[in-house]
Length: 119
Image 1 (cartoon, rainbow, N blue to C red):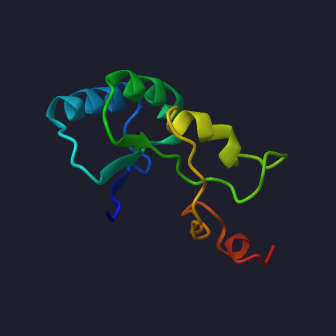
Image 2: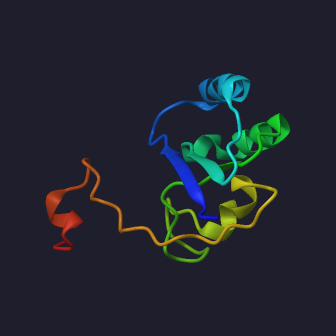
Image 3: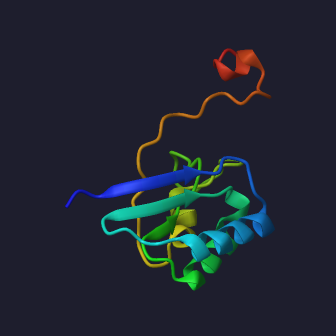
């Protein structure tokens, strides 16, 4: 059987309270489909509390994912989050391997010369 995924990236939306409320409503309406996995990538600040909350809801074939994982291992990288730092938060039932992700686009607040490596 072919594995299918529905993946939702919340970007920079929903705080912890709003995220838990969303998952409560989702749990009320959700019906698992064989061969389909639902993955939600909430903002990083919600990941720890949502991991425990979603696990407690017992949603079959529903997992969490982390956004913007650093390409580097743990170390002195300001603001970066290494994959092994969040692996237990995304789904306590499974161990996922990080998937390749394109390099992040320059943030709108970055100086244009810095975003191109000119400074």
